[in-house]
Length: 257
Image (cartoon, rainbow, N blue to C red; front, top):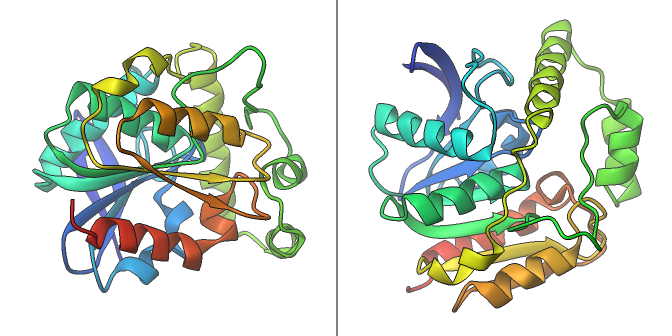
């Protein structure tokens, strides 16, 4: 796994790249940082050429004022893909990354070989809230987005370096700014049947942030899609079940279309 930077639309974009095999792009959640997949990428590197990206203004990527919502992020990801030479690839999106992946699947499906949607939705329903981490303390985020107590406590004990703290703060501010535009959660439920890409939908039975009915609706709407539900797991599937998640991803991507 190598850290890299490339210039896209006047800004420097930080991303991770590693491994050999078919290309796989991992889109992070509202945390907005490629490092979110740091435990998953090594588990996939033997089978895939894996990429992940810091969104503009998040992590180590420069901000871009014209980014105001999910559609803008999707358009930027396309430009970044062109810049790094990703003509076609598998795409997996977690939470906010899933909204971006859905936007790409509907607006520019040709570059996507297979689609994986992790703990995400196609809409926001009035009867089932979606929890926004913006403005929460770190302890509140751990208690809300994570279910397994051993994972929560391990993360609570971790010491962050000054640079890590600065990246997290930058990312939190970038998310808070995007939230103000009210353009993050898509309303794409009515278009799900347009998706013809082989799709895997992953949910968790203890997800309080984007609860399981949202993933069930995705499966019902995307014809031929498959679904996997992790038990005793919260929203943060990437952190709580990295080994099992990597295995599910590998099995789906290596199976015949």
